[in-house]
Figure 1 (cartoon, rainbow, N blue to C red):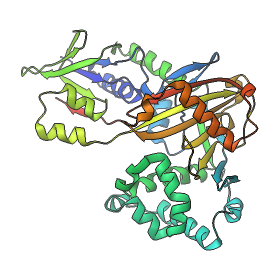
Figure 2: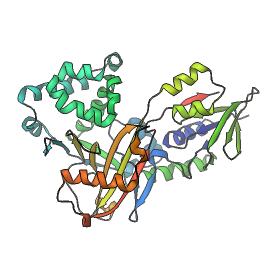
Figure 3: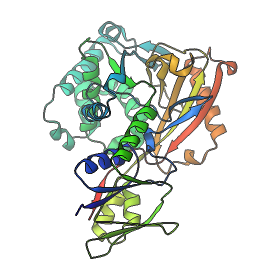
Figure 4: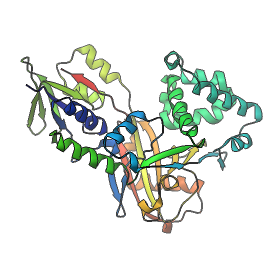
Length: 389
């Protein structure tokens, strides 16, 4: 008799787990609270153009994703492009896309540039990253880069990605970040190369959903889980807020840990505390469709103070503009605590503030250039999977 397994959370993680369990002969039910599968990888429409709600890019080091794309026969649909990186520092935009530009980078003197380069080299060549879990990212970067480089470059970047949570973050974070960027830059062409699937993540999700259908995975959408209950007879019952039920031998939760704690009343006090203690960052991301390109940079890192967002991602510097009907697609992300009051701000106010910040970097941008803008929000940007059996 086949084992039945329910997966709670229909993002790309839940979908991928469902696929692999189906391959092993399990009866799989995939449960999603939203109206469609995909989660943070889902797409939406901007002025008639369908693309990712949040920005995504593929690096040569993303082995799990590349393996999945190979399984989905989408390997040939990956396009790779050379990308360039900018820094907006002291009110000016600087390029830092190659060694010469790094040497010329005005905000740092030669000594601090050498220390910054040494930090990146040392971190990228570390093999035993687990040792870094015992060292704070601040301590590690101060040791190798020095105070000036840390405060001028690293600290604004850490705050932009982690907020004040950087204080409790280990040096393993910067190791993982540098490793990914280092491998992208040291590709076969010795340039910074990133990829995307032609058509965006909607192509991946549609192909994966069709595969799940062929594998007889049962998919339940608009199923908001109210409780997960062990029946003490080898069965677990999942009940929705509208009283629907799914029964299985095991349940895998790919939802944020505090949600898992809330729906699993039979977990111990210690287990609930551990789940609730997991800290998440949220993200607010404004997508803007613009008539013309703003720059040649895929990413502009913002190190100046007072910006409402934490970087500028110009997707059309990576993706062929034919997918945007010749226009340019820009993302303005802001990473923040999941309880930040900005989540209660209206879309119109967020768009107004973010576009004003964008004009600080690109003053040539006019209101007539903007075709469409939309605000995406996710209070729990990173997720964890737990198993309840």
